[in-house]
Length: 108
Image 1 (cartoon, rainbow, N blue to C red):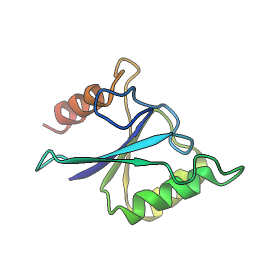
Image 2: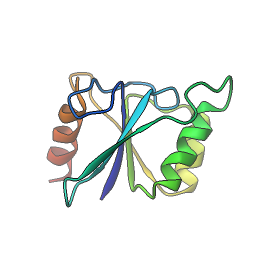
Image 3: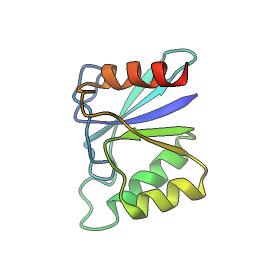
């Protein structure tokens, strides 16, 4: 499965970002191959509609799941319509690697 994780930085040791729409970075991770890529959030600086832009980015990346601390109503609407699973990571998940560990444990 392809997962998109909100992140403060561009690598797996970066802190997980609790805000989906305003996340500075996204880590796209393939749980099968364990390959990953980092993308700057194309909508982070928008004055409005950042959640919709972020959700559309997730749709365009063909992900099956997005993981963040929280999702606003606009992003949730787009992601739900696209049938993309939304998962909130626990507070104790500090880094992207922590989030990946949480995903692997919850899906096994």
